[in-house]
Length: 248
Ligand code: NDP
Image (cartoon, rainbow, N blue to C red):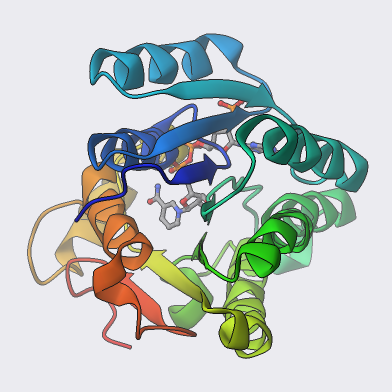
């Protein structure tokens, strides 16, 4: 797989799965735009690791949930880089709680970042791709968007929404040789999952046929495949990377 000369934008590239995606795309030769919202030091660490691979990268702060920030950021990227080839919508948050007790703001915030944030980025990012008549859009959804999960009605609804967004956008953009796919991670060891109690982790592990928790690099591999020419005939799909815990 060779992504030399490609410009890739990774939302939430500062940590966890996003960082692993930035590193893998950089290893394949892409120039990477590393987005973050709240942790500049984490974004700088990703930048240092990408730079150590000898790849070009820039760090760019914007809140995916804020449409004007997103529009300004994508304009800046196209002005400076001339194009956007690969867009990975990875930024995401959780605000877990049982439905009966869930606060309205926890619903709204998760929708704003995970679902509307992806809409904002896909809308802004597809414009240069349409002009180029080539692009790869990869959206990070979740196993819970397919299987559901008690305590995550907001998050699983947003992630299920991303599957519909992926398929509809794939139909709209296919005539311009732009593919749109999603990757659905299972349980991956990152900051997002580190705070789960040990007992919950053990329970999840018991439901994973491969018997191990996933690593950010497992997701980066699927993303890199979808970004590559090998996946030119794949669009509107969801790749499940979950150790077998859900077989969709
Ligand atoms: P982390 O919590 O480790 O990292 C989240 C990333 O998203 C950070 O880079 C953070 O930036 C960024 N981010 C959060 N809110 C915004 C925002 N409003 N605008 C821009 N960036 C934002 O998460 P993971 O790496 O675990 O998850 C990455 C993606 O994978 C998410 O979409 C998540 O839902 C999904 N996923 C994760 C699973 C897992 O088991 N870990 C399972 C299934 C799906 P900053 O550093 O500045 O805060």
